[in-house]
Image (cartoon, rainbow, N blue to C red; front, side):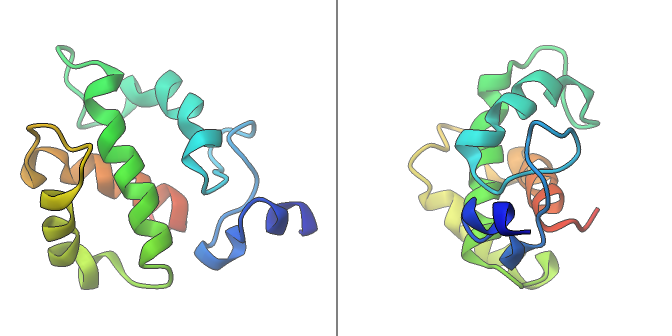
Length: 114
C-alpha cells in the first residue's frame, strides 16, 4: 500500500497497481500513457480511421478530471467537464460530444467505476 501512496496519492481516487499491471492504473498520465497507446484500439468507441493521437487529449483530460474532481460522481460533474473541455488547451477541434466517451473511459478506469 505504501508504494501506491508514493505514486501521487492514488488511494484518493480509488486506484491500485500501475500500468505495468494491465487493468490497473497509477493515476499519473505519464506512467499510464503507454497502456492507453497499446490498448486504445480495443475500446468500443474507437473508429478505424483515428489514431491514438486523436484520443490522447481526451484520455489525459479524463486523468486530470478524475484527480480534480476526486471523490465526485461522473453524473454530478459531467456538465462541468463539458465546460472545462471547451477551455482545455489540448482539445484541438474536438467537441465534447466527440470525446466524452474517451474521457469517461479514462475517468472510469481511474476511479474503478466501470
